[in-house]
Amino acid sequence: MTEKQKNTLYEATQSRIVNFNEIGITNDLMFGTVYKNPEYCKELLQRILQINIVEIGIVEPQKTIKTTIIGKGIRIDIYAKDNQGNVYDIEMQSTEETDLHLRTRYYHSEMDSYQIRAGQKYKNLKNSVVIFICTFDPFKDNRSIYTFQTICKENKGIVLEDKRLTYFVNIYGSRDGISRKTVDLLDYFKTGKPTDIYTKNIQDQVEIIRDDNEWRENYMTIEMKLDQKYEDGLKHGRIEGEKFGRIEGEKIGRTEGEIEKEKELIAKWLQKGKTIAAIAEDLDKTEIYVKNLMKQL
Image (cartoon, rainbow, N blue to C red):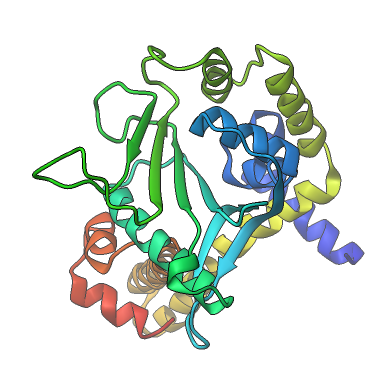
């Protein structure tokens, strides 16, 4: 990084007033940085899923899965694969959204397609597990863990062995019926205060990472990129607006900036698997409006 870039980054940090000491494990970038460690990831999965995992062979943070040559693919917080070939998508979800259930469907589909493109046959597909760790209760039933699999509606004793499992973790839910280790994990996610050796090790890593200058630079770079298109649009709008006077110019500038920000959000949400209908609802726009912006991406 050049001296000029460092100065720009420093100025951006000051203008954003980022308090790195407040960044905890529920920040998705921090979460991905900590849990790229295979041992930490394995213990996380064991505590949530209540299973024994011999070994986690692959852990990739912020992985983009592409299932077609021209497709943009989806980006997931943590992609993990165990020694049996089972694959896991772990998402830290700190924003309450209305379409998480549809995103899980999309994630499972993309992960299955990714396995098949990697040479697997349908009959050899391994378990596909999607986990959302939520800082809210997605189903308003006060449970810490919601587990979903495909069952027969007429006879719930018949399970469709499609090897797809979906978990929603609510860090604020009731602790009834879950193990002590799982309680310690969820309490740590909830409060940021460790209560056993494992969560103490995780918190130690959080403190080391957020004091790391390179990580801070990376964090700020990502934040700056998210803001850059908004600022570019605002600037462009102001230039165009000079033709119509100061008041109209500022109005156009704000509009251009808002559109660029919306395009950035649309691109991000599409990668996360959100539907056009859900995006339109979140932006309070029509589906036609969203589709028109998608053409400009």
